[in-house]
Image (cartoon, rainbow, N blue to C red; front, side):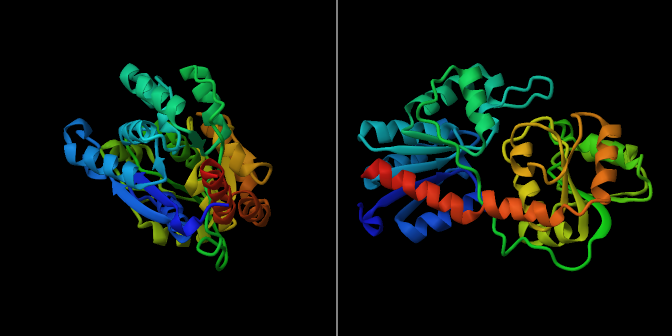
Length: 337
């Protein structure tokens, strides 16, 4: 057995999203952790010598390195770790192995990025996609063998996200609004479905990074409310109010908002795309991709169902923080044994 408290982990990340912070917290609980935040260098990483120096020093200091997302920071982390003969772990969230030209989404649309992602996935000691569909995509579209790839689902906090108060006759979706996500997240389908259920309140929570939201608003019926961006720690109140949560995406990894909503006993409505059925199982209702009428039919069924408690139970059982922590700690210990 390794001495966990003496084990040194280099943790590399480009942002501090809640699911990344969750991993950092349990790694800190178990190991000695040094963090390298490369977020400020994402646009011009090649020119940030200081970042490369911090990654090199971190790899030298650590026993094992851990990165979120198979991007440039992970390439250099893996390269330095290999030079030093040390193991590396890289988490794949979805975009890195996506190839959806119809909506302009995915690293694999750029040949140079595809080459980089392939290097990371072949040279990292372990690659940890959050859904099995991402492993399948990497093997199919990148030609990697996949022997070092192990799916580990994200984990979600059932104490933070739980039902509270009476449910409203309300349908919710959460996502940043821009020219890519309007199709990728099915936000246009969500708004069009609202037009077929005019006695139901539809709410879209999410900030806008361009003028796409103006297009959505101009085509939206009166029963659609656009809330704008909401801090993550305030999202639970929206989930708690909503009877139904929609994930009408064309492409996904394993949607965090969907899992959080299910913990709050929202009845899920989703497409059978990538990690959406992984999360939902048989606790919700499915709609065809890009089909507002099909979405409205599924939402109508969800509004009349009592599957909310089953949805929460599924996430608690299959996608808990504790389950992810246990899996990753076991991987680290095995690699260092």
